[in-house]
Image (tube, rainbow, N blue to C red; front, side, top):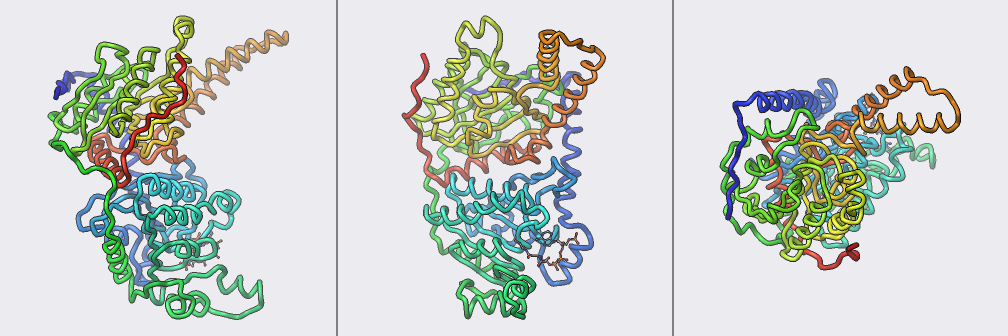
Length: 533
Ligand code: COA
């Protein structure tokens, strides 16, 4: 198999500038990670500990196999809206092995607003369940939540109901669901254990009811208390909602691990079949593999040379449609077909991409899309050459391809390029981004310029004067707004991806994701929409 040879000049000023820019972009991420890890902050954490409770992250750590990797997802959900959301959105989600079985773990962060669910938290939880369903991962919920964030109920109530529907549908597909209840699990939240196949309640701590004592008093006039209404002991002995009564949190986690061990769960996809040796070039150099200026082209093979096993890559059609690099490699010993942008997509690239996706489906091989794309080519020559119909072929192939897609966004993701390269709307199993990532319908200056031309034309047609000074002001404001809404942190806050990652971790993250997708069968399709010829 061919091996990629790096031409990256790590002594160049350009490399140094790109590396500096990437390190600078990583700083706010580190600060956010510290905030997320500090959970609710000093006082709520101290109060939580005084109650003899473990923090959500400690529960996750104990649940997972010792020293096992945890692929945390959407760690900065909510970060786009610091006014009303907490970074992390009060819930931890991610994939890690429990008793040797890769599981989706969903853990409420009880020290932040009582673990109540915010709008970003609903979206994050639903995404976790979607990932569990598509990749056939058992779900373990670590529950301690005040239910819906009541003042924000209008943005939670209707979409949030899907959580319980999804849990039920997972079970119906034979994907096990397990709830370990450490504290409050109230109202709609009571349906997390309610819809789970296995439940473990911590004695003296779990309280699970449709309405708490104050609500019961309001509704029926009955005087009652937490324990009688929804305590662990009551549910274990009387209602039957608790399958297991744990003496404390560690016992609950031990029982949870045993339940997973007893599932006898096996991956349905093939095991790794190729050597999983390290790339020939250091991951550290990925820091300088994305352009600080998104308009400057970078060689995507430099990224592949630092991600693929042994830097091995058998390129498909290297001389044709050269701004889309396609070929075969592997990560962590699992084969992948790669489609990676090396510039704008033209007709040739679109046709080559559609062809390659069909080949990967014929071979039941997962696809890795590496996005750095400012869009499909525009202009008279491109239109007359059929760029729409050729782009449609690529989008048709991406839409109907049934092998797992992993999408990595290292730079721009603009326009229909996002669609043709398996953007979030095209259901990739996972989407990860680098801090250098920008996402929008187009770049800020281009969008502001288009609006200016349109508005100037409209004024001319209506015979209205068009003030150049106002135009310049509006352009600058529009550009700043689009810029603010195009960054990696904004995007991940909105849940447009499954996480912003440090470029140096790319291979590890992709290997974990690739392993997770093999929990489900990996099968390609031969069924597409008619290709427009
Ligand atoms: N919505 C919004 N905020 C909530 C909340 C909810 N459902 N539940 C708790 N909070 C907030 C509290 O207002 C408080 O905020 P603050 O830190 O700004 O003061 C913080 O979470 C901690 O609440 P507190 O009651 O002090 O913590 P606790 O650990 O003693 O109790 C609960 C936690 C969840 C048991 C308790 O707050 C509770 O019963 N909440 C209401 C649950 C409910 O009825 N939910 C209905 C959902 S449909």
